[in-house]
Length: 486
Image (cartoon, rainbow, N blue to C red; front, side):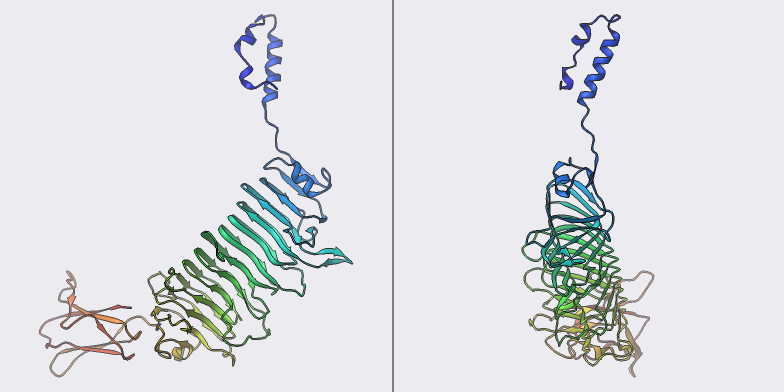
């Protein structure tokens, strides 16, 4: 084939412009046809190729391979960008019982898998028997999963390392087999979104596992998903370890009713678990039902601060308790009104009544001796609203722990004593909290200054605080109260 640059005006000039015009046009057309790149084509299995792997080997980057309905006893290796699409997860299955990944993908590139099932068993006697260790393993790849089912994988169903993930309508463990799987999605150094995930089998210890060490930074959104916690002795719907940015929104995280309640404390059996350091986690708009614990937060002090914002979640019928908080001597959790921006709105409900195994809505464990920071939890609904302290275990119960601040700071009374000296009282929100009273005389041009006395003052009594102005009131004075939570 002649390269394009070989078409030179001298070639045209070698012909008579009039006598050979048709020959020149024909030559030009031939040369242009020769330099047009080969177009991508759709490939059909088994029509064009008998096996999926042979189609993958023959495909050009970016081509689409269509799988007809049927069962394909293969393990696949993909090292180029392509799309592999089946005829539906109910009738198109790639299966094999093996110790190697069923689908091994190496980048760089973008690989899309859609509309088929990956099964780690062998087919026989009308069903799939046995298991495999790994399902999909993608390294340095942009992985797209759309309407894919993964079954009978006992170690890692989907692994993405140093790549991206865009998973929609993925179903895990849709075939009931009485064995347990370790991890559904294993994500390390991964960026992307998992949306509309369905996992109702109760056979997976950790459905989504993010950044188990060592791992590069991960940023993952999990949304609009339904995930069942393991029916075994421990597990989590979603767990992150280190160096991650995770958003969990509008998910239903549950455990089946009637399952055996694990013995207290069972902190490693929860809907959402943050096990390490340097994590920013936003948990908003989720329903967490019938879990041993809804959330477990452990902070690893001295290594790197966590920032955990919890807002507008429904925590229902916890068999042991709502939120466990441990290992942070800093304000790393915001349940409402704290510095991370949570508006609160979390609802804790035990209906019709807490079970005999229930401990607390929020529990400061202080097992590491580091759970000493006061944290905010304003504007929430507690499972015992008439006596919320009965369902909160914090500094009021263990002086080594921090205090959960559940109320806005309010001036409760303002009066004048017999000598016309102003007297203020306000609600106590946490032992060790510091307060300042400020005054001004003109609200239209306020110039707030500290009231007479030494400020800030620290309340150590866990009782409402009172302050009396040492001087009698001689003019209009406006007061405001400020607090600094240590």
